[in-house]
Length: 202
Image (cartoon, rainbow, N blue to C red; front, side, top):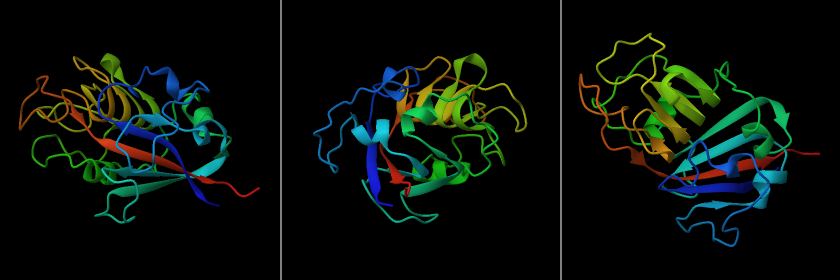
């Protein structure tokens, strides 16, 4: 089916973890043109059934490739809407969520974060220790921690809250990329993101 724009995230905490927009049926700035950098939630978010989600960083639509700015995620089940997805319990066994592609698309600075083969609790509506949470994405330890632990210090992706951090619409929270072998609250990172859903065929 056609790809429909569901949400645009532009800096700041508007679509942070605790934003009611993830789960309510309101829209925001629905007249905002596709290519305008702005926080917006469209009617498609509330009503369009889908199995595939497309996330584009810094550009409304870009190449789908390991080096591209967009990534796609396919679900095993059809969701009645994005709102239904984000109102669901945590989905953390979703191995399809490609952490490396998310880090690449968000332009996480190599060497400034702990790059682990698998991060802490990856998926949707993820909730980790110390208030680290992500609507889309994963939790992570600070750079000085070894891989394999479950004690989270930061969240990466979209719809975030993090330890000692303001909420983040898209990017990562304070403790994620504080520098090699450090564990401190640095500045969070904000990215502009477009979230699309592919309308499921009836």
